[in-house]
Image (cartoon, rainbow, N blue to C red; front, side):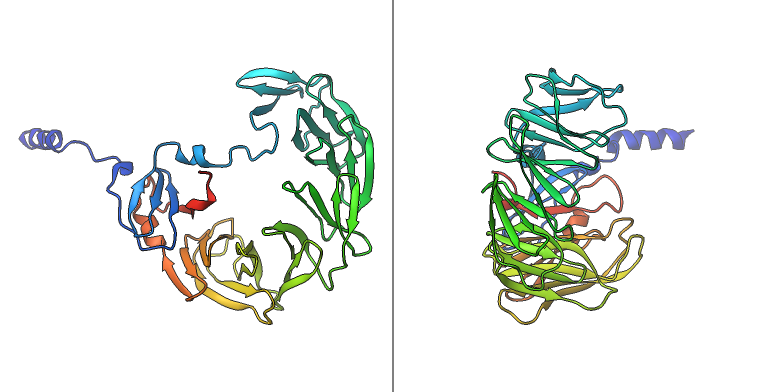
Length: 374
């Protein structure tokens, strides 16, 4: 009895254990530019000199990209249990679909004072948000890809692209090579695709310019800054200008290697980074290598190699440039800054493990401060 009273008194003096999110902040290593890291306890800023500060609450939400929409960023889309679409602005319904679309969901696209959505069994519907929706393209498996700056809707199918006017009439339909896909540049309102004959095409509205035929190019097309295209195949990466001129290429023959982290192009467009690994979903180990290849170079150079730990059901990584430095984060918890000039690596995983967090084994996420909105 006496021991219990003494223990209770001691606890009252010492107080309850401190909340993990109030833990003291560690110091980090020197880095080439500020980095933002975040855990379940919030977000933190790592300065160039290694100092760490806690960022205000909701900093990520305030500085993120929001919905990422070009149009209608303030609108929320809902669908009732019966299948009616509702558009809300600040919680108030501003438009509702006339018809019901139960068990018939599909993609949506927001335009300038417009909404398009897909009904898998019927086709693509369009509304100006003042009246009822109307069917503008019939067919199955159609997708409302995006709107251009003129308010015209781009509708995609497995091998065809249809341009629809703001009034709902079909302006043009073109065919593309499915294995190369397509990509849209919002800055220039230009749609890029490869024709069935192998010509690179740049379409602005209903006007199309046929560029050169990229030689020996395989894989899906993606847009990259500054003004480049990247084609990623199962065993190759090709970088071209927007006119189709090849400026860099990488190939690998080992079919055990997985291309699992996308492609990161340097700000000057002269260097490209990617990762190959031997890991698969559920793997408990593997080897990952980050490569860099430069415009005009004959060989791809390995920059950083490490053994992968367990990655769970997702295997992959993020690569992001700042000047000549790469921020590399892998799903197994590896977090490193790679200097492509000196070929040195600065480990951030130890810092991430000592930042305040709520649960054991939690993995920190990170991005260059310059990747966020000001």
